[in-house]
Image (tube, rainbow, N blue to C red; front, side, top):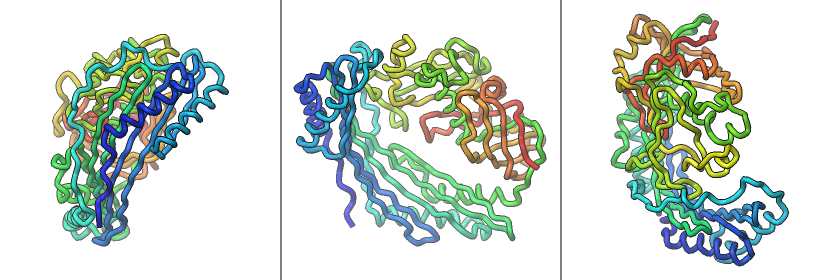
Length: 448
């Protein structure tokens, strides 16, 4: 078997982007922007030692947006030949001539453009033949199955590698790009004792394959987690403290980012409307955006509009410092872009004391629920109402007592944020939001 084809070099993508901008100018556009990208990937999965899937992925694309004054048109193509580029620009221009004027439309302000493009060490290709990927997936699953005789079944183990190269340019003279990689290992295992069956999983993800957790460790942890859930009980309905494990806690703050994002604010569809300057979290809680962490999963030298990314204090002493904006939403709000077109870049959530160690965290929880899995999408971004299916462990007197399943945890995000009592020091860096476990003083637990 051959490995996937290497993405087009950045020079070729720059040529494609430059051609698109030149064509837009030729068609009379007053402004234009374009981004060209190529990505490739390999993913394999095995189940009970047998190969389940081997998938190659190879994508390429060009997106073009043109402006005729305040009229805007966009078109895209997966064909990067010169003829297809010219045709795509023509279609974008034709669309723009028929759209209504939007006073907020346009390119980013020139002063916000990135002038320097730092190398953030995001590109670490993994020369991974499919045969070796299959071997690694088998080793991962086997390590999980070997944990205990009660690990009787598996939903499989997977190994994947991705590389993406992209170039963005606009008619303000900006033209830059970078490549990035992402590699992963995961396993999902099933433990059984009598009629009781429980599943759990674990995964590792990194820019650099050398920084992935050992595949045997991933499998072992997945097996141990599944085993720990055997004998799960239901709870009666009650109110109690609720803790989120670190891998789930990022979702809690993801809802906050959605609420303070530009579109939610200008559409007035946020439970944190006009929250800048408001005390939303307890005073010990801080949030910092750090876009330039080397090798981090959400690092970027510039955003999707070419705006420079920069360090930022998003929440200081519990007070919201501002919003998450691209240029369009910034204009709608009478503000300036924050370099967040396309999203946030590495949000670090911390507390003054650095977070509690695990034993101290459980002691602070006392008697309540430790949530390790969430199900469903019961979060209303307009009202903040929150209701999710959950499972995890009941904690008594600061020690895990027994596993729990088939419950629902409910509350409203605004009082939940104010009622955060503690953060753990067990920070999970496997995503764009880095945070330890989170303890909330009281939530409704709906059970039997």
